[in-house]
Length: 312
Ligand code: RIB
Image (cartoon, rainbow, N blue to C red):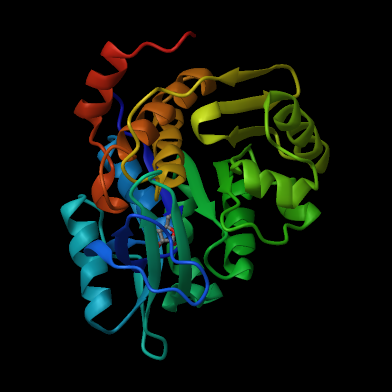
């Protein structure tokens, strides 16, 4: 296996997660069944998923000078991710996410306050410029400040680095940004919000993908949970079915998919094989609770793929 260098820019926040038998209605209090605190944030989760999938990760993010920031450093170190480009913000605290998980469905509801990761500056990005330009893949999301995303994507695109943009959470995307994206990876609700097209099945996903291709992305993978992942570029399109597993907690499944996709594509797998690999990483992640700590390692994913074949 060739180790690929992936530059990931995105958020780190601490996840405060409670599980309960049902979500509370507005004004209602329900008793939880467990509480967990751990590393989260879409950028960090994707970096950890890619590192555990075998990639060499340069993580670009920002944390506060506080106890939650210490959780970030410990999590990156334990995943084998260097912390040279984990910038310190002396004004803003590390962000946090309140996550409720419904035990019956494994579904979640999240409120995130992004804190220091929403303050990635031009100077921070310039410090990491060489790492972005030297990567096989640049992977980012929309959870940090948008101006930082635009600047870093421009650097990666100008250097000919493959840009994967996961538009989560959905936010305004300029035409200029769309045109710099090689692989655009919304989930069904983000695809719907951004395109205005209902994405409930393969036909809806195809129409939304056509919208994004017209906007200028080179290819698009719309993740649809149990319904699979729809891929399209200018020449071909197809739906990849999902692997069937018992979902315990779906939080971070999209992050697992994106980290797995970047790692596989960066090491030279075809886009088809990369999507199958990413689907396996996502399937395994939902069988455990938590986000960063639920990401499977390479050996687990390989073993899972060997015993659960998806049609190529
Ligand atoms: O995608 C899941 C992540 O979104 C959680 O870890 C939480 O931190 C939110 O940012």
